[in-house]
Image (cartoon, rainbow, N blue to C red; front, side):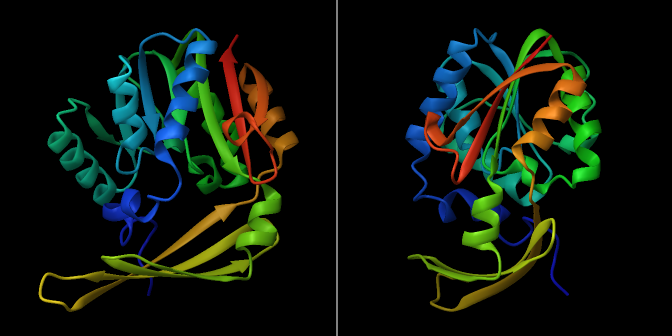
Length: 241
């Protein structure tokens, strides 16, 4: 039986996504927060191995990283330590968000919300809204329905890296893409360790998410990846009313 999401790839997620231009993506995020006049204290949910959390820290923000995967958090803590970034990383689930105090902004970058089932979206956005100060900013993205249906659904992806090989088998369902992942990681002695996991990404339409955000008490604007086309990724820039 496959393990749950981000048990196999959580510890090497950043390495496996090294081709996504994290540097440009993080700069877009920082400029978006600046444009929205967000305060300095925030929470980066679904932080993975912490690239965006570290980038925000370097830009002068006091931000904590949060993720549901212990493996991802362990790697995030170690990478931050090696890079001299004093970010704190916490275990947490965006669908069950309960913060001790309110923050100026919350981010959820690179498909975090795609992992939330449609029936949990309203409560998730209400939880995020409750965790923000008045005028607080919520920035997140989703992979577009077109991307999930035509690029990922019913397809097999193989990615070969210097230290790992990832085999990614996807099955398109009515409202989601089910993903079977097998990771082979190179050991120092030249052998490989195999790890398996199962993921589900849900197909969320832009209008559905806009309605849920407005019902939760946000004003919202949307744009595509890095401010461009919405063909593959949709960004939601939300402000608590």
